[in-house]
Each structure stands twice: as structure tokens, then as C-alpha cells.
Length: 212
Image (cartoon, rainbow, N blue to C red; front, side, top):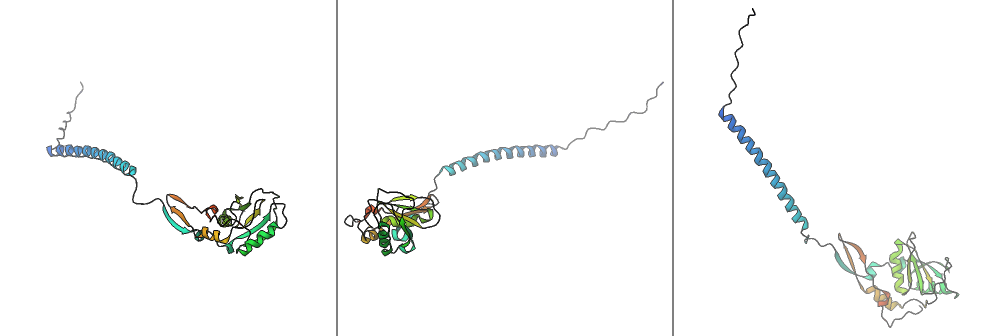
């Protein structure tokens, strides 16, 4: 006969106080409200950001335009170094042109026949690189109708190669008028600095091109 020992008494279930249940319910409600408020704030913030981004910014101007005399933008002739070439069958054209440019204040380097062996049927060619672009623009005022050729050379020196219809430099009076002409220059975060220089064709019609 199997004997059985005394059975262990069961522990009564732990009773939570009523106030603790109330605290738990209150915390759960606060958590749910916090989640709902966070979601609403996120959507509201996204809408405000979109509206702000879509509105144009009128507080800042993208470009600022200032007006300068062309002479303030272009270099002085004494700062421009030129190789003078002859691209025609006429003897002495390069020498004659070099003398005229020298009298206008330009610095003359080489004087020779066109090393490229070209025969230019037009007025002339002005050859330059990125660093000599303003020098070439200045020379164009003296040789209107010349063809501008950027050959991407290094340095600031430029070439002038006279062609078949070249008849001399423009009168200094017409060049001075162009140098005094106002030139608008736009600059700022919304645009690239760029000067629209006056065309040599805007010179006084009565001051036609003639030999210096």
C-alpha cells in the first residue's frame, strides 16, 4: 500500500491593487495618443515643407547687372602682345600693319608671313586662346570684320593675320566711341558673368576703316 505524503497547499493568486490597473490603462492610452500625434505631425510637417519649397524665393535676386564703360572691361593696348602676319600675296602687308598697331600702343612680337600658309579672302583672322580673349576683343575694335578664331593656345598673346580685303585699322575716333560705350555685365548666383561688348559695327558710320 503506497503511502502519500501531505500535499502542498496552493498559493493564492496575486491580486493587483485596483490603482495599479488604472495606471497601466492610463499609460497605454498616453502611448497610443503619442503615436497618433507623431504621425499627424509628420504629415503636417511634410505638407508645410512642400508648400515652402514650392513658393518662389523673392528675397534674393538671381542676377545683378552693373554697367561699365567698355574700356573698363577690355585691357589697355599696351598690355596686348600681337604677332602680325600677312596672309595675302601683297608684299609688306604685315610690316605696315605692325607699324600701325605699334602707333596705337600695342606691343608687337613677330612680323612675318602667315606661318599656317593660309590665304585669307576676308579682312583678317584674330587668333587667340582663353587667356587672350579680352585682348582679341580689343583688337577686333581696331579691325572690324576680322574673323575671331579661338585656337585654345596657352598664354595671352594673340595673332593678327591680314587678309585680301584688309584696308587698314579703324580710325581712333571710332574706336574711342566704342570704348566709351556702356556695357552691361550680369553676375550673381543665378547667372554666369558675361559682358556683351559693343560690336565694331556700332562705330560712327562716317569713321570708315582706313589706314593708320
